[in-house]
Image 1 (cartoon, rainbow, N blue to C red):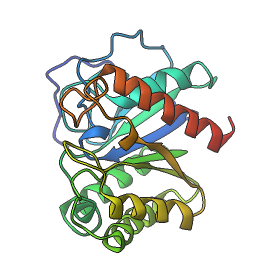
Image 2 (cartoon, helix red, strand yellow):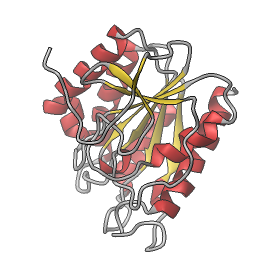
Image 3 (cartoon, helix red, strand yellow):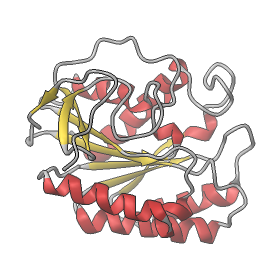
Length: 239
């Protein structure tokens, strides 16, 4: 296996298998697109898993395994969870900036998704939660197209991790208005599948204060949506 090196120094650790684990994926707003990075103190019980090297590291932005070199929304969620969950927390990020749900269901990212899930399972990790944040690239597709594709993504995730909960963000805005067919497709998936929930309505967090380029989240926007993620996870999993 080829050795993977990182330009930023990360501290490798043994993955704490008895832990609360969150897989986080979709497009750029699930990646390292927050500016500026968080300046919050990171708790000692916070870790990240890199699906490429199949190793765990102490939590540090930018997160490994996803696109972008900025901060990440999930940092705010993870920090808040760390004070409530009395066990280690592992974040597993693997989103791809600019991606369509059609790529995740039928294209090259379907193979990416398979590889990530296989590598998570090989390490004996078992995420309790997967968070999906995607839709901004899919203006123009129909409700049925989106729903059918996301159902494939959900079913594949559940095939590997049948007991996992799946959070879907309502997400369609990036320098544009809401795209109702995609929002309705996202809602339909939430309504039609067990252990599936709305993680956030991210379209409602939208102005220059919350999105520095009217697409990606600022610190303030990331904190706001990160807190909403926390509340949805808390309400759904009853920890």
